[in-house]
Length: 229
Image (cartoon, rainbow, N blue to C red; front, top):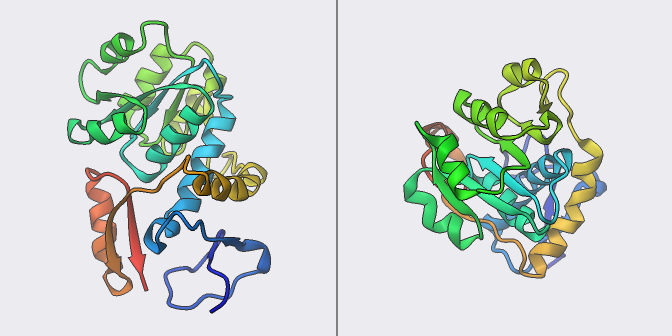
């Protein structure tokens, strides 16, 4: 048997077999099973990009909206690893998990800004919007003074209008290609060292990709949804 590897980036990966360039191949962390390993790279590089774009570091308090998703769970771990305090929004059903990862969980919904203030009496230095809701952007703009330290990966139109960092593949957004590529081996290293893990919500066979997407659209679970060839 050859080396166990994972691949990123991998366009067209809804497939049983895939031809990729050698530069996209990375060692599979031995600490993860195959389903977890499949969920590491996209979430990890997205979270790394968002934290780098907002300069989150030691001593900062960062508000992260949508923390029960795959990117949010990764962002909590990476931010905590940088020495930041994380205030994480999610539904109450997911608060125990977020607290175990080192975050201060708060429920989204009416009164969110006041709950964040109570959780972070020293103030909020940066904010990551991983859901694109008006609430996430409104609260971020209310609590973070420096708009260069607010980033969204989902609220594109409002993000551009508000003058915050817009990240991803939307026209005009910062795709962070260099940051994301450089993060890949570091994510493998951190995972091997036990500093990162991947939470898998559910797996689906490839033939049931539509059902997997319906689950994602529901938006209430915690972790990654994985397609298995």
